[in-house]
Length: 492
Image (tube, rainbow, N blue to C red; front, side):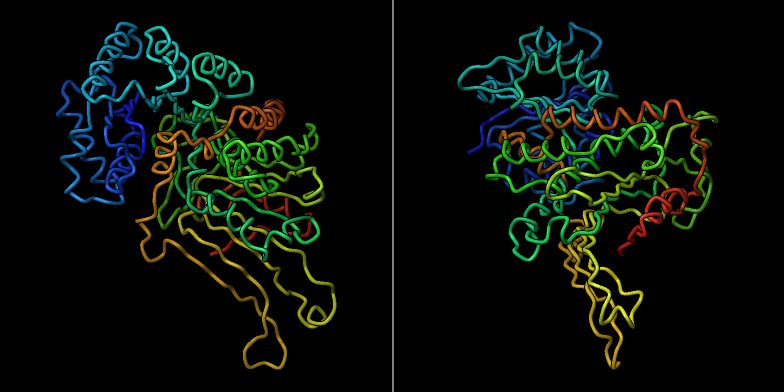
């Protein structure tokens, strides 16, 4: 049975809350995955009344929820509470503390709380300090308070450490839930099962049989309304430091001793520790950055990044990153991992592609010089599934080999009914399961790797823009694999 609790959202009227949090909470209610005694408290300064807040939540659920059963609407409304406050006003936190205490007395939730910081990263520290100053985090054998924080967790290693020191002074590590929403996606969770539950794959999951690994998160969209954030982040901080490196750890980690959060995270950290550091000269050879120019995206003309509203006409913010790296351990020695992400690319997709080594150059290779490699493709989004590409004889021909596929799609019949990542993440935080959240040492090692790239780039002229919107990125990204005798796989 789930502990009763309050779910307190700071930034309750923002884009994240509307697009992700309220739809996720509504779906969890429908599926019976919320505690019996449960309340959602939204904080913000936008609305003057609870009714206006509820109307906003209703619109959010109507637009973004994968399920819309109206029978649950009244029950969801009873869970919703609104507290108007300005985060910059310390007195507001004192009033909030009193409000939450009175609500707990009515709800009989015993002081259990989840604080979700759906705010800008620079507000994490001040809000946490106010929680401490106003006695809103207090532990006893029978109660708990947990903190959920969104990425980015810092802008570099130094700022991440400073932020972590502030948060960990109030919350123990097991009660800090650092969100990388990609870890909540169904197929990334499935990746562990595919590896460790199948004798077909796990014995081959090493440098004796695997030629290379490609991990891609590509987008067709531009920056939209995220100009202020993106101009200070760029693709390296926005996607590589978290999503891509986390996908790498799940792909490359050793079998954990069990499926506990601690055991899985221990193995993920070992992968991050094993990533070969790169010198500045190696970074210039193995890491490519790009920025999109004007072009055609999904059939319509779009402007270049520097012409987006709010962007400096001389901006050096990267919208594309590709890199080659190596995991220096016994399993993966010599196997290149190619990572790629970018905006305004040819297609939206997130995939992990395992390319197996080719067969010896005999038999069919003598007559089929373009024999395709065997590929295992983990499709994370928008389609969720697994595909295996292998070679077979061409029908009706005496000779001739063609690539064929075995394809499993778990969301094709009901593409909009796959659970959202935030549903799993919120449910796990309420249960106290940290498996799908990043531990501090994971964040630390991720920043250590990324910081060396940031510092090298500061001394290098990027030469932007260098790829047209609607393409697959700069030519240098293609050359990155071509010089190894490989190419990026585009798997439909």
